[in-house]
Every structure is written in C-alpha cells, then in structure tokens.
Length: 273
Image (cartoon, rainbow, N blue to C red):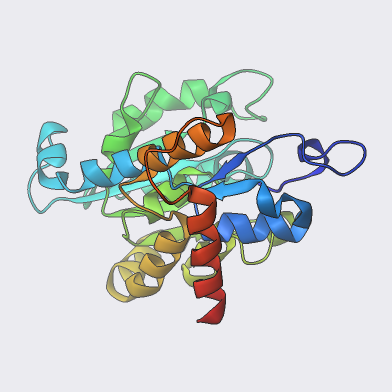
C-alpha cells in the first residue's frame, strides 16, 4: 500500500494528525511518497501481529486442536482476489497439483472471499470448485474459521500478493510465490523483499519439487530480518497505540518517552547502522 493523494489535503498538508504504521519499512516507504508526513507517521507495531506471535508460541497445541498429527507436513495456499491473483490467473492448474499433494501434506486454502462471489471471481465458478477441493482432501477456509490458527499450523505456504503472505512471514517459515506483477509494488516494500528471497512457482507441474527445495534451502535468517523490520516493537503495540492516542489528544502521558520521540531515535539509529 502507498500513501497517495488521499493522505494529503489540496495544499499538501496531512489530512490526519497521526498515521499509525506497523514498522520502520512501512514508514520509510511512506515518506518516499509523502515526506511531509514525517511528523505524522508514528511506528507503533501491530496488535494483530502481536496476537499472531503469541499464538505461534503455542503452535503444537494449535496443530493438535486442528487435528493435525505430530510430524505431518502442512501446506497453506493463499490467494488475494482480482484478475492477477493466484486463483484467477492460474488457479485451476495450481490447485490441480495441490490436490495431488494430499498424500504428503495436510492442505488448506485461504482465499479472499470475493473469489467465491459471482461477478468478482473471474470466469471460473470457484464456489462450485470448493466441493471438488473438499473431496480431494483440501480444506477451504471460510469466515467462520480462525485463519490465524491455520497460518500458525502451516509448515510452508504457496501465495501471491495477498496481505496474508506478510502475516505468514512473521512466523518465519518457508514460502513459495506464484509470479506477480512486480511493477505494481514499491521496490523495497516488505512484500517485495519477501518475494525477492522466495522461490517462484513458474510452472505448477513443478510444485512438489519447488516445495521440497524451499523446505531445504529457504533463507530463514533473511526472512526473520525482514519480518522484524516489517513489524517493530513486538509485544508492545497496544501500549504504544494508547500512548500515541493520548499524545495526539493532549492527555497526560503515562510514560516519559513519547512514541514519536522513540521513533526518531530508532530511525536515526537505523540510518547510522
């Protein structure tokens, strides 16, 4: 996502008093588009990611609650929606090979709900295809499922540009990407950094081999570095958001150091290194 014209008034001044960013990478990308937001964007971390990481620390319990046997490999396929997403570009071929993997993996499909509505799902009737997937042993997640649990349970992912890919990256496990239109995304953004280090599925026929290669050779240390820069102040997002809101409203601070001041120190330290 980029901070475009909607973040600024006609005279270039910010619309908002505060914009909360999850991490330093997001702030830097935003300031590339809108340098005037330097005093507006506060890095607070992410309460969603804090919750995901807390759940990830109970991964064995989560897998057991989902009925996944110990030692069973688990794959999650994640798709955004629109003409360039995994499902609508090459979903039928990808999923036909995914179905063949159920002898080796427990398989989940997490796809944007718009893929299953007429008029938004492209030429394929994915709603009908759901039953075909279920017959072959692929579990298609819906709004009643806690998707966080399935991200935590998975050992490896196949994905496109869905935001779920960035959440899965926080778990620091291997990822395989289908090809995306790189020109649509800002160079150096978290998504592009993860995409660049991940194996690409250019031919669905090679899916099993690409997964095996990723399991053995994925650069997890590099993924961990990107994940930590994508979401800063892990475990402290709720406190920082409260402090930022209090500072914005002019309420008495509960901490002697404001989030904005911390951000300036962190950014200066990061630039110096």
